[in-house]
Length: 183
Image 1: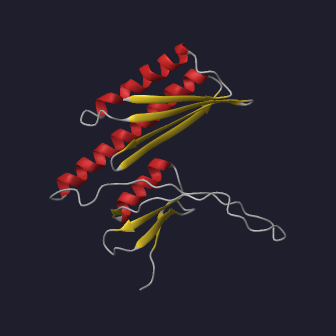
Image 2: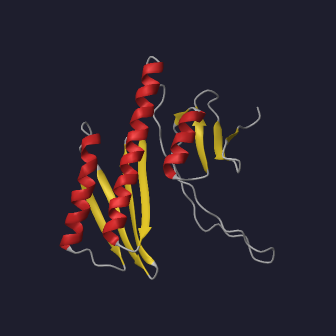
């Protein structure tokens, strides 16, 4: 695994870089077939603490985790633990799905979502961020898994059953909803 380590409001020292690489290499055992992986690690320092964000794009999956604490090294450890849990959960689910069917119907793909602010009525409506992504075919269960892996409350995907764009979302009661277009 290769690393792109950046610092915001912090200089990435050789010792800090070595620590990140050592801790992140713990994940190598999960990627035995895909060694050309580049993990983006962003270390940030704020007045109220240290934040570490890690993104690992894989074929058919995007792993992402972040953690904030008073100690940069503790945040790095926590992020690696979160990523490891995500990978184990994903692999368990894929293996279970493969055992239940003849093969994987569609790979799980991650997309991004942008946030828009809720302006006052007097303010002008403005789109502050736009994201584009390819919709990959998957079923609603796979979309829910991806949404949970990202920590988002909704996820846009191409429904493999209907071939339409659909949205899964997390409801306030903790269950999930599915939005499908009418024919």
